[in-house]
Length: 226
Image (cartoon, rainbow, N blue to C red; front, side):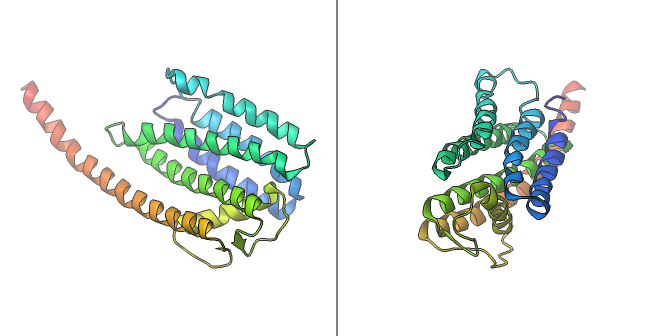
């Protein structure tokens, strides 16, 4: 796997990850959701971070998967919800770094390829998942940050519902079964909707612009050679 084909693996893995999260919530006990965080780490590690990269910062960033896996194992023995906040913060930071790495490869490559198009879809999914983690942290801190969410749930029971809410928000569907109930969560919700819509508009414009300038650049190169 290289930077020319890594996003096909990532988009399949992310879709399977979200589907697995839904299946675990539907058919298994709540603690089954704990396993999904390890699946998240492996998914992103193999699909994006597995691409050959000589950047020392990202090589050193492999410490995040190790820390998440260790805290995942420790969470079985730490039942206090306060002990799990650090784990979610580490996951959030790992998602942010992965999204940055994905955006750098997709938005600043200077060319339009099928891998870059798939990467732009992956970045859209990653943004929704980052907001889902933020919503989960807000619900854990506030306890009643969202309407339609049961109180006193563990984070792995909250995460699937708030991931669903995040995707509903970023796509501006707005079903209304879950809604923000505090000013801070309301701010996060409308910021996600704004960022999601601007991302799609800018992405489409960039892809169209790059596609239209590509033949022109190709003709100029041919003229220079002649």
